[in-house]
Image (cartoon, rainbow, N blue to C red):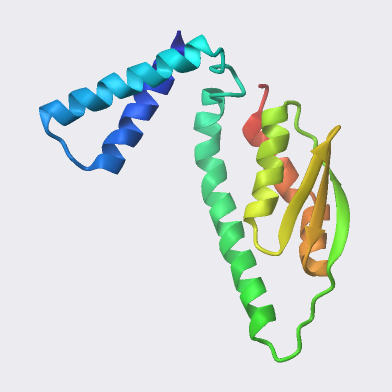
Length: 158
């Protein structure tokens, strides 16, 4: 019940932020829409720890700023590579062990790698993430496992 209510409230807040119209009729439409979608999701049995991972909420608040900073740093690195007259790239494929316990954690790790410019997660299977890196430096950043540790900390005992 907690996840269903949490989904309905999250959808309503998101709907209100996107609509920007705060008239009673429009808000009632938003409430009705959010409740309908939450009910449909319940009927489809997709409101679980993977479909709506609300248990990651508090820990994710500390992870997101760190990830945004990593994305900014990687953007600067990739921009510097592009601006230089001679491109110093060394595309490579590497495998990175994903130490997360759940599929949600592993997907979060793979998506975090992809969000960081210069690296793309190509596949995730059996706790291993296949990564294409633009440079040896970006490959080394994945191999060090800092991001893996941060995602594992966010995942916690889930």
